[in-house]
Length: 459
Ligand code: PEP
Ligand code: CO
Image (cartoon, rainbow, N blue to C red; front, side):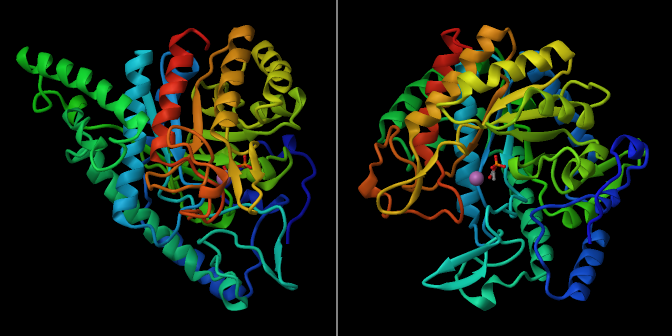
């Protein structure tokens, strides 16, 4: 199905939403019924866009200020969203992200740009295309947009109807997020309420409570001066953007639309899209697709990336060198970042490419606990962030933000942190469909620790 390209340069002007089809696309499911698959894609291309191109442009501008060191990016959410996510769970994930943003803003004094891994994070790349359990081999689970996690032959068959359900779930999640962030839930005067019934009794919750007291005093002071959330929309509403890995290219193509204001192409499935570590080949279909859409885009950079490769990625994805267009999400591992990242930072700095540098301290710090659960240790996550900040400080570049997998639910998937999850707790509430996520209390704890690193000039 996929042809190997002759050369990306010769194709430079020939981008279209479907030009990726001339390139090798890794990690695409094998849909058993091609007709049903095409029908679903046709239907998808007739659906309204989920986001407006102007919103993506606003995010690019905000990311440009991150690039200059004038703002900080908090990109966070689920590893793999489920079609069964409840409204409460969506609200709680948003709430934790808002709480973290409050902590980071308070300590750093710079705006925090909030981008969720949410409202579309349904597709997962896999290291193996099949899974074997008790001698039975079935297609791997590729996220709810493709098949079901249940280990049975029927549930693992890729079902194109799921593409449509993914759109509908993304749409209703986004609608709820817009309602919460613009309709009063995110009002700054609710800093205390966000904490109630949740982490108030944990050490990080108590620490947050003390900070919320201070913010409340500041809000009262402003009210006394006549500035209230009634008079100032910024106190009542927050800007919250959506993002996911652009993995299933035919889904992304179907939601790619020409902006009527500018005539440019935007992938309207989310404000920001990123390319995963497994699909960032310079001559691959994912780079081809994303180079042509005008959204702000990201690319994961793992421990095997060379400075030459990263430079090629910058040239391909941001040839116009527009600040805020390209975010590189570094995920090298706590033990590797300090050695591997500096030559890359130097090469990119020398080239003059503007890059939003972000640390994903999750994906290269995963290990299997004794009981067989995939997990991550809070201290490794913190160590990678700390190494990331230290390297930027010594190279004279800006550490722009963090990219995290978390949930507001009270899960026991990652070890350590404020709530002191230990090995034997992992089975208690291990609910993730893919990678282990920080729970609410661990997330708030991490926000405080990251804020301290930033404030103490370690960044
Ligand atoms: C992810 O972000 O869930 C993921 C699969 O990461 P990576 O591409 O860095 O492995
Ligand atoms: Co993940």
